[in-house]
Image (tube, rainbow, N blue to C red; front, side, top):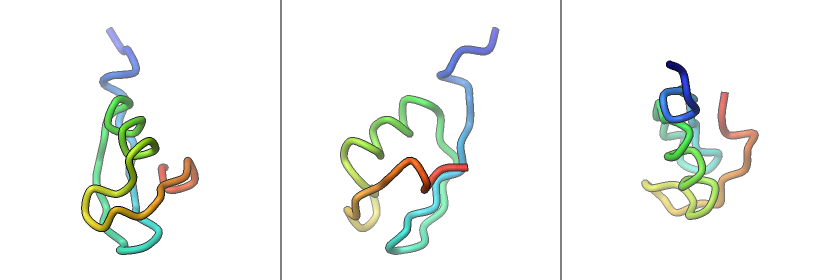
Length: 48
């Protein structure tokens, strides 16, 4: 059952502090495009 799409990560923006639970595809989008709230660059260390 468990593909990467259902895996959840907790994202915490290093700039604005916004916290979101995301799946693998949203994690990839955040890494590619930055924070959806403030636009800051995101690194893998922003995910737990």
